Image (cartoon, rainbow, N blue to C red):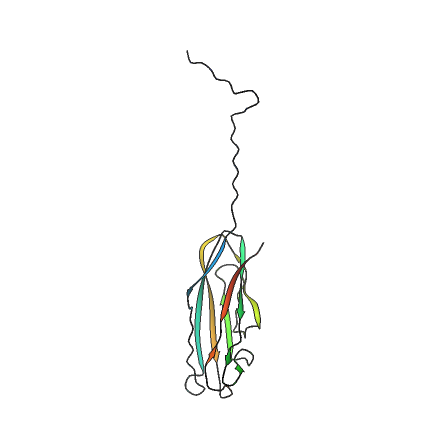
Length: 154
């Protein structure tokens, strides 16, 4: 006959399990890390390009911001953003809000995608750029950096 085992006094056969899941939001540039515009006011006054950002997150929602530096033609001190010659527009991959129409970026940091739905193993945020010049733009080379940041929305 098999002996019966009784639980020890004040001990029940129950295991309590707890999991703490960290929230993670990752952003990387998939394409368009370097943009080169080749324009002239007569033969090619407009050029476009794009950057694709990859977002991976287990958060319910996120936004993306962009920090724009000055975009100055150095020899003349001519700022392409301040003079309304550089434009952006963005597309949110899901239910979020992008920038639908060509827009001159704000100085400093601006939100380019708002309240995009999260819980994604990877989705692409598209940023499009347009440089549109005329004879009021002096010749030369302009350089700028853009810093993108993904921000959790709770």
